[in-house]
Image 1 (tube, rainbow, N blue to C red):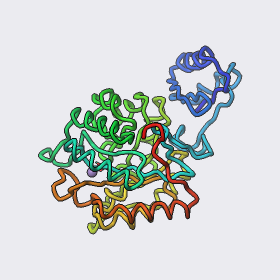
Image 2: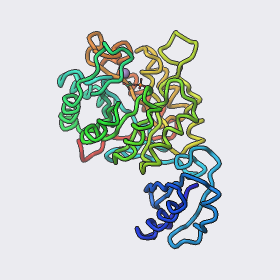
Image 3: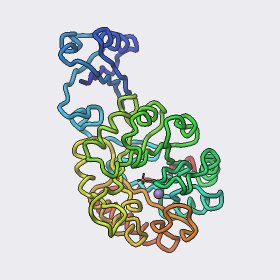
Image 4: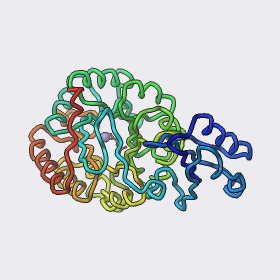
Length: 345
Ligand code: PEP
Ligand code: MN
């Protein structure tokens, strides 16, 4: 159940609703929506119904939502949401490009990759300082040193930072540097981590688990929303299938499916889905025309020596054609390219 408070509800009225729900053994999670406070209830619905919540001062609506995910559902909010990252919009009407290296390796490599991202028309810089690697012997990322490099490159280029956090214990530290926190495919059901990023006060990029259904993906988003954060962008990054010709199978249908079930923006990762440089352009085209709200693309100044995911990283010569395709297809779809936040440039 979700309680929608009226726009004028006072903190005292919100507190009274929470106290009443808790008095019958329930839990109440307060989330700030765009204009109103929402309170998600967890517990025995039949007992909540006896509380007369609808009549309490400050309560506008009490909604029983039929989907298992509530706050992120379109049933709860029929219009699609836009998430802003330092003023960069991700959502309907825009086409937002995020680009950068898979991993932060050196200051020079990160700066060069960020300049490539700018050339591509990206409004946000991606780059992992903490890498969730399948092999414990593979490069695990530079950790806090990588975050410092990202912050320096942000200062030099004006691009806000999207970076992954892999452990709930690191959320506070990563949030000090990041403008958007990324949850990777391998952690989509790390519930403690989802709850921690829900409380971190930063927008979240939630990648789909490689074996997760759309419903499981939305339930993961609900964990974040329930802890007070509705600034969530979903990212389709390919799923495991029997096909081995590509690294993962890009589930393009998941874009419109997730957009119909949830009000959250949905972007596509053509790099981690195809896993091959030559597929990034066609998969990006498919994503934009399927209605994605953006793409996140790997670029690297020297992929042949990259410490992570070199084969899928675009090189400088690939950028003009992709930039043109994104601009043309965004216009075709009635979307504006999200520009770099002017004050940061
Ligand atoms: C990444 O974006 O670098 C990454 C690790 O992606 P995924 O979690 O989708 O594999
Ligand atoms: Mn990667």
